[in-house]
Image 1 (cartoon, rainbow, N blue to C red):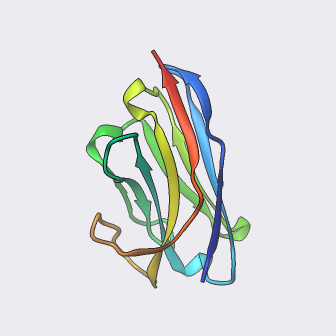
Image 2: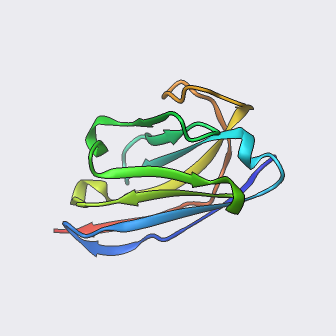
Length: 126
């Protein structure tokens, strides 16, 4: 089981950047895929980005392609989400999650995630 703690959220202006971090504890981090999700008030949770265990495959939802970058440092047990050119529509609570199955080669919205962090709030003002 992986325990996850997000950080890096905050209040920014449109066009600004933020980098979210997800620190993991547990010995299985390097073998699991990681994902970033977000949930805005009144909306369903959305899968934003994912990365496989060895950083050879990534996934981005269309609305963040070209602006967000997911990465991971297995030696540091940390996953990151670099968010550039932020828009008010990016305002949400952001959560990181770890896949249930280890050694997932391809990350898609169908990948099952089973360990979740507590979330970090990102607010983008216009």
